[in-house]
Image (cartoon, each protein chain N blue to C red):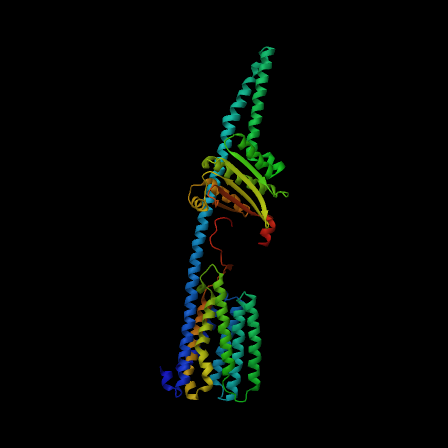
Length: 279
Length: 221
């Protein structure tokens, strides 16, 4: 107030006094706003990071559990199927074989050969389940067709697929990941949805690669998918998500507008490496 | 008189703190502020001991306005990332230097350089606002008040905001009024020096600047 008292020109004094007070108030207000706003943004960001880390942890757990399950399945296949078969073949080909008559020897060798053939077939099946040869040799389209033919062959579900624009194959490792995702989705549909048809289409639109999967059973919506993803259940879905992350891909679940069937859309960048380099 | 002495010698605070913790203050822009603090202290000190002459005062204040603008604008320029804002600073500086030099050579009254000082304050306040605007849009991994540049910008902003209206109206004030009102400058100078000292004392932080993240997306990363 002493500024006002010493001044003989009240106009100038008031302007200066209130101007200075106003400027300081604005400045302090601006600084306080920036501090609080930034704190709020950082806290929000930290919450997001926490959620992201939790999601990563769930995905990692799912991936490890799936790996363990796969190893157990392989171990069980080899131990329970291949092991007894080879042991039986060994029985036929024991040391006593030389003491048997010619007909019995031939019979034993024939039986052992049959068992070894079965074992070869078994190991081939295990190997094919690890890496389908059709996928390796002829690509995703043929592998999906093959899979769907087998499903349709059972007679309970009508499975079909149509690739509209697949002249250029994806990279082999990307095809394998995508095939596993489709396989997992189809498995889920067969196990849980009770649908009568599964139809897969592929197309490319504006440098984006799309796989769409339709079925008429009980399906998932995006909300269900997100809920399952955040819970410890839904191992297969987490596995799908972690695989798609490798491809920088996106998956959406929705019920069709007609409410008659469910749709799952997988979306990838067509040229992933180029996309990553430029994006 | 006492306030003036405190204001002048408060200039030693940031100098001492900068030298005391110079390992924390290796950034070039901080050295610019350190240099500014030394020049500011020398100017204030020499103003007290130089003979009272309108001409000396005029050149001292005008020269200091130019130096102060240069140091502050360089500091803000060095800490900005937006090319658009940087271009604005370059354009603003060209106009300011042109105008200030014109006033320096064309004046006949040799009074306090009110107009260049006002323009300097307005421009630097604008640059500070741009700086804060950029800080709001660019997310850093640490709180804004843990960075040295924040405290320096706050010091500059408070100092210039407090003195802006005094610079505007200084032409209309009598010598007696000026003497009274100059305490605003002394107080804001003390506050600025304290804030600069805080900045120099803060530990150096390495920040990862990232643009604001998109809302949480579970689909892909």
